[in-house]
Image 1 (cartoon, rainbow, N blue to C red):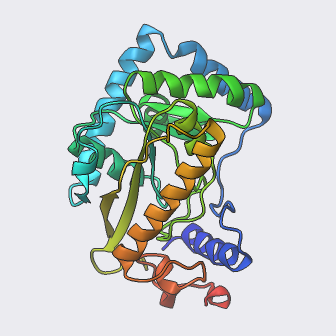
Image 2 (image 1 turned 60 degrees about the vertical axis):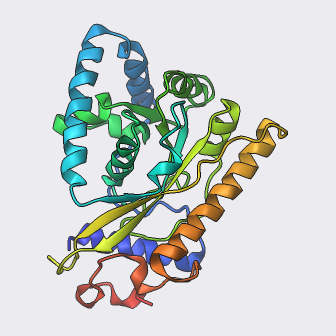
Length: 291
């Protein structure tokens, strides 16, 4: 286990004990000044329709697809029949516990015949360099920023562009990533706001982690099982705000039921050692914060 992983687990335990289930728990996350973030957004918007960007996107998406199949060579999926007839744009939701778990969702959608998926990602990730930076900038990703003009005008336009093209967009309703944390946390409304605003369904997924071997450096490997849940369609008799609230509540209920079926226990937010899948507490140096 790395020291960073120990610190993250410690931060998760503290956040759960404090009842702050949306707290940022990662350490050493990159940060950008408002000016630098604006420069990244301006560059993204300016270049996105250029011939060079189209070529780089084609290349990055091919690499991402190869990586998706490699990472998920042991991933299993259930519930594909629920979305095999869905060929429109949609908002995809799933739990967020690892930088690569979105590939499991992408893998599941491809098994259902949905060939592309866009992902919302923090603008700081678009400042990455090298191979990962290339993928982050060109593999069907959309930056998210708190910049009011971008958030209010550009971001909705970018999401709508994907949806009109029939490309689902993955938006994590939990927002912050909690490493290896298996419980679905309370949702923020963003994903459901866009589903209601653009009158598209929610493709609801829950990704289960299963321990798949002995611990290496204090962390056991895991494989994924993606539960594709019932798609959630906007109700014709509700306005945009009411639909947002209804879809959020429905999705939380579905993911709660999926969690309880997968892990055979009632969902509560009292911390349990099993909440961090594959973590070897016996070797942690942060024993003072263990339950």
